[in-house]
Image 1 (spheres, rainbow, N blue to C red):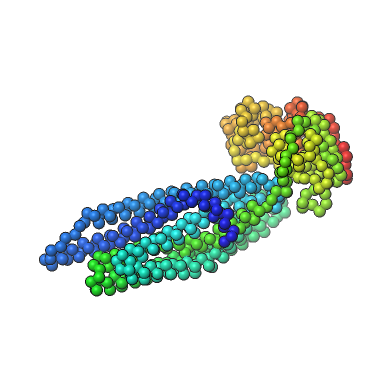
Image 2: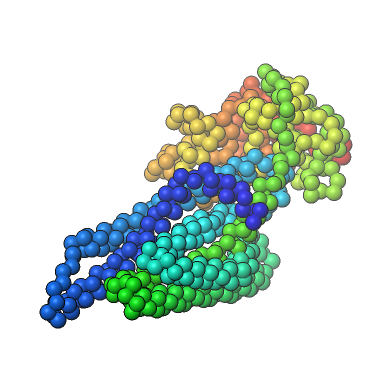
Length: 558
């Protein structure tokens, strides 16, 4: 259970809310016990009194107090159940939101080299299914068993007030039966739950891979093969879920059997006490009905613990993800940020962890403050690696990268990010409005700044023609935009940010020649006064630069 410790500690931060939720669960069960037991007593007492009166005997029965008690328990049960559901689900949703924020914050702290260890589908599964699986930790694995044990003890005490031996015997049978049955269900159920979690992740991953790679799969004619693999995973997952459902049903049925056996035992004890004139008839009826009322609270306990295996598997995967450390670390004593945008690469060797050999070897390049330099070369020659070095998404294997004469590892990452804006080859557009996507770069920007950024990238006319203008929703990954429009929207964020050092990797990719020329012409005056590193296959439609450096796989100095 070690894997659950971090999440149990998180639960402890909500202990006040969880204590209230557990009390409400217990109150619901207790009110149900009181309602059924008191109703049985009252009906029996009424019948006994009526028989006595019919036989000509003098008898009387107080009906107002028991009647008020019945109404009290009925209203309490309904109100407690409603408030308990609202309270516990609100607590769990708060907990999941907190957990999701923590997991996401941990992911955002990782650099691309560390993130490369995870497939996108796996990260999605961690943020959704795995975190959601942990909601059962409190709702089904902790609160109901605790409340059920307290309810059993409460009924045992109530029976003990009538007859101590009855309370001890019935309470012992209930506790032993519930414990043994729960263990019998939870032991195999834990393994099934873990298998369900693993199969669910596998199925989600295969589906996401199919959707993301559908064009390539169609190109090579292997869509059917991928669909067949998904079908196999789905059938295996359904089979496991059916096993879990059958086990949960057996647990609930077994719990019903235990309760009814305990009820029969309480009935026999009650009849024995009644024949011995130790209790009245109504009390003899109250005893088995009080036990029967526990069925609602105890029946879900064995099946609820089936979720423990799934929660453990989810926690284990989240823990392994959280254990990944960034490869780019903050300096212990950050240097004072420089006032100049001078950027220098000094005899750098650099490469990706997945590459057997460095992509850049003994590469040197110096960009003076406010100088514009274009680095051109074929795919795979190291342009994107050079861009990652410039913003410290990657550290060199050898050599040094300096900003304003200060080595990048000596600067705080926030200082680097404030001074350098980087447009990667991939345009990350979020499911939000145009304004929302732009203001990621500068949350305090006003409409005037937004329109200026769009004007620089030749997107203002398009946005003006939209019915909702800046408030237009662009859809998931910018699906409502063309590839070129999404690229320019990403470039507009760079303009809006306005950093003194600009790194643009293939800034005009996906644009037609006329649009690319227009954007290049508008970028030129905006880039004036900023140190700029442009990376592309060639200089076609790039803004004019002060220098052009051709990059290949051989050692380079510029």
